[in-house]
Image (cartoon, rainbow, N blue to C red; front, side):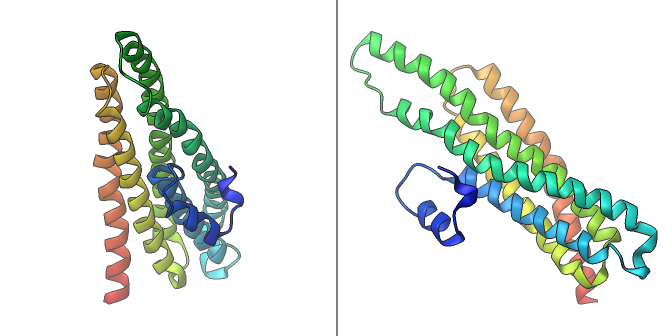
Length: 210
């Protein structure tokens, strides 16, 4: 299934159905993509303006980096679905005999590990997006500052949503050392970048309300 090629109506209809995919991971990736897309818009509304000539090169670099992140997050919508389907099937494997239980455990071990990879990648890409959005909020066109704030809010949602998709999978892992490793990676990103997103939003809100 090529989710990025769907219309908004098609994607949201599929998301709201009883199908296993797309789910929270894909929705988080899309949310992050919307956030960085808004950040990219701010760069384009800044580039070429005399008032912002001093930051044009920085805005051009940010625009290029935002475009790459946009594409990577879109691709992660599909990849999340691909990684989750084997796990979805593994949960329904029979467990009536010792052999069946062992077979299920082996499949679950691999499927849970794979299912953690994409939400961790979504988190990493979203952190990179927030670094760019900070630049947009600080240096971008003041006429588009609300869009930088919106971008930060969307990326915070993407970050926290993807983290939950890590934690629901690590909770089921029997390899607790690996689970702890994945949890620690997610926790580090949450600890650093949720406050970063909040700070950008608060900065924008202050500018608009004062």
